Image (cartoon, rainbow, N blue to C red; front, top):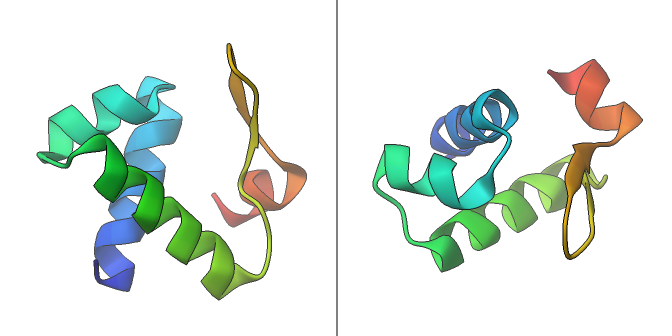
Length: 66
């Protein structure tokens, strides 16, 4: 996925607060969403989301990036 598309995905995840729903909106599979966010995090050398089994929240880096 191109950088601009991964930024669009990141913004959509933040807006809808759900990885799966953001993928549905953009026509992406859950695995494509995960790969794109992992790639974006690698490019930025920082995690963007605190992940748990029940909740995802933005890291401080992600808040500044947004």
